[in-house]
Amino acid sequence: MDDPPARYPALARKHLCDAKLFATRNELIGAMRFLRGGVIGEVGVRAGDFSEFLLRTVKPSRFVAFDTFAMHEFTFAFGRPTAKLFGGKTHLEFYRERFSSRGEQVVIEPGWSHAGLARQTDGSFDLVYLDAGRHYEIVKHDIEIAKTKIKEDGILVFASYMMFDHQIDEPLGVVPAVNELVVREEWKVFGFSLQKEMYCNIAVRR
Ligand SMILES: C[S@@+](CC[C@H](N)C(=O)[O-])C[C@H]1O[C@@H](n2cnc3c(N)ncnc32)[C@H](O)[C@@H]1O
Image 1 (cartoon, rainbow, N blue to C red):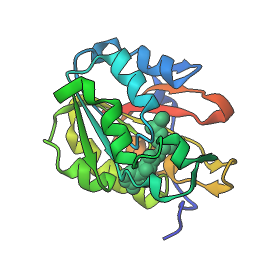
Image 2: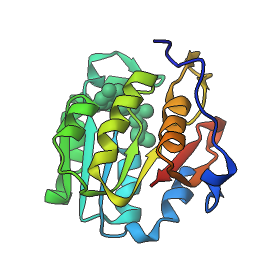
Image 3: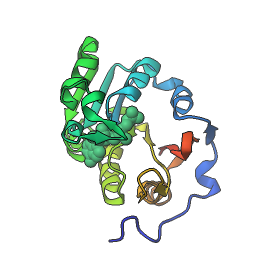
């Protein structure tokens, strides 16, 4: 199987009827006022900067952080020394300490995204933000599980809805995987955000 596949469906006007355009992912999430107090997950949290934003903005009753938490094993990540990023702690120690004051509101699921998602209760999430693996097969796998974990009107948001990451010179599989979900299962685009350097986000639901 090619990764990403050479052929995949394009979105059509019917998938966009209520879609809105946002300048940033923060504005996209901020527009989802109906999420307040809900249950949300972030798949791929890095040091927790976006987790902090989601917690502050959505004020969820429960926030689940999924990550392998293995980034400290690399000397550099995203152009920064990981020892500096995590203050000399492991990735997991750093993240756990950062959100320790939030008690049971924040649940941490260390491990592969698909495995962590599979452990969750079906139909229990209002939103899952997917920002972990970006290869086609990984995104497809995450989608297959994440879509069973959201409520009937729940939302999946995908980071890096782009064909190619110019910073790391790598093709991505997010667009083909998301388009297959939307077109084959007749989902709708809730919103699309431009993001600096076109690291676009797309929010979709049934
Ligand atoms: C781009 S960073 C996430 C950034 C974060 N969402 C933010 O906006 O601040 C990707 C994260 O996903 C994690 N990751 C990558 N592939 C993964 C996988 N298959 N399962 C679990 N975590 C993964 C990495 O450890 C890293 O922390």
